[in-house]
Image: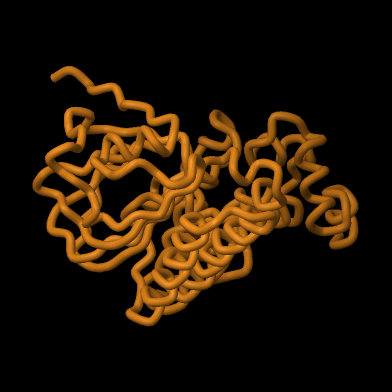
Length: 304
């Protein structure tokens, strides 16, 4: 079967056309309800889409699945998920008629504002759909109220304050996303705490093998893949559970393993660094000193 090439949507107006929506009232920001889509005029021939825009969707009461990247996600209950420019999603089909609301904004709209420089802080744009945010009724009501304010703002009369007020609404929506994901991490703690056990075993097995010598240090992507998470979701999950992201957990494990080798073996510092996955001994020494305030050699001497 021939692999389908995703269709790239470059503008808000093009997205509205494909979804069977009326023309947008603003060229760079759009807020619409899913039940406003005219399926008779929607372009359903393009099954996979890539948007050059940010998208925040609140969907509920949907029987069916939505593609995201290489996977699918069920939408049997109300959830919110976010996609960044360049991510692959599925088009809306005849048998997939969600209810809810969607906010779309082009990167050009925020590029000149501080928000444009801070978008990397909102890691949930890189989460997979199966890591979407499950909202309580109160949270859903808050999100919808902000979306309504945003819609009213871009649909109103433009004045000197319009752009700043619109961006303020976007920032509020993103801040709610951060808060509610933090709540989700905490309420699922009994389940997600198991991730720590699995992570420690993964790291232990990795460093007990010859893989550090042949492949170097384990990467965030490797660990996330083994644990069935996206890179960003795993790091944010660990940050909420322990205060440290995935990379910091890797470094912590490496330092503890290095301390054991420094005190329990006669291996040189270079040999230890090589065994732990460092191509150059200077890189190992630099990391060790940054975490312990001592060089590997001085640490060994202090315990002898």
